[in-house]
Length: 187
Image (tube, rainbow, N blue to C red; front, top):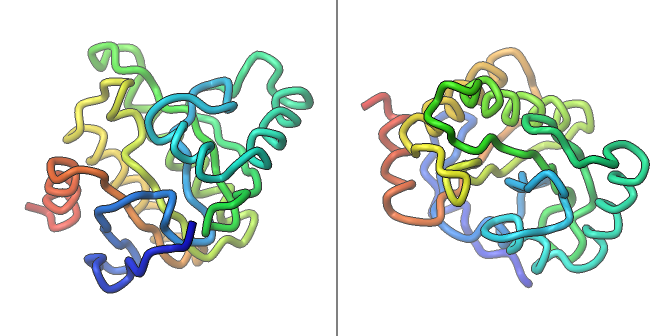
């Protein structure tokens, strides 16, 4: 799949960009997969990334499971794989929390998804990273709360790190885009 020309359509907020579209077509250095703990594919963004990236991603995820996480990737952790046939070079897989009312440590776990993904990107000298809205689909995390955490964590990380140079929030629907736009604008 050829990358789409998304740069001109993205809104800029310093080193953070906001783009509405399909994360599997974005040509950042890495994209972040909102994975389930198996990291072997699933529904939503996870399934779309695995389908578009092809079998190379699954093969590497199987190795990670066999060597590091036989019981699955813990919530809030992140691992790096190749991107297979995606325009990106790498995929960072992270497992977001399932929303349980906000009293089971979900906020900290979601913040860890962003922190650990960004740490991995910096450690591997990745220039740009694209995030989808982790945990806001099937995992039921309320979009306004999840967006506030995502924006806060990314801003804090970028304040003290040179890499990644650019972070892109990729939204799939109008509602999510508006929530991110409001949060990034400080409205």
